[in-house]
Image 1 (cartoon, rainbow, N blue to C red):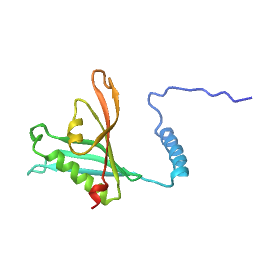
Image 2 (cartoon, helix red, strand yellow):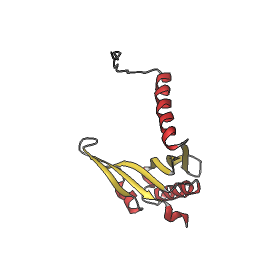
Image 3 (cartoon, rainbow, N blue to C red):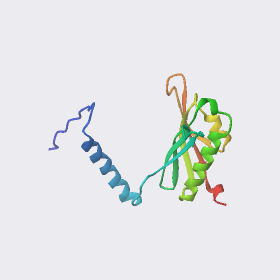
Image 4 (cartoon, rainbow, N blue to C red):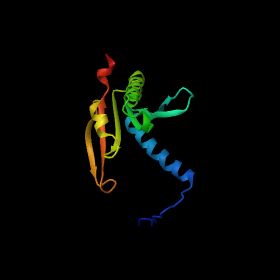
Length: 146
């Protein structure tokens, strides 16, 4: 006879329980693909007074660079700072062994910006959030190796 299990919805789960679940999945993955680690990558754009006016946050792992956040202050948009941040991050990712990059963006953010810089859409969710779309983009960084 199978033991009975109960599912509970946890509004504020104990961090030890979350860590336990994460570790179980990590251990399973390691058994399939070997040990891996994600390394953060941060770039900051600062003005002459060292105030942060832009930046890029991502992480590197499994040969891929994930761009989590790219932001430039509104008054600086259109001057090439976003492109410069992205290209500097891509080059650093290549230096750290990445062959590809990927990111998610919304239709009201900058999908055209990324596409103009060589990213291609590989997935799309309609009405996420309602009335908009979420795009999944990727780019090969191998051309940056030469």
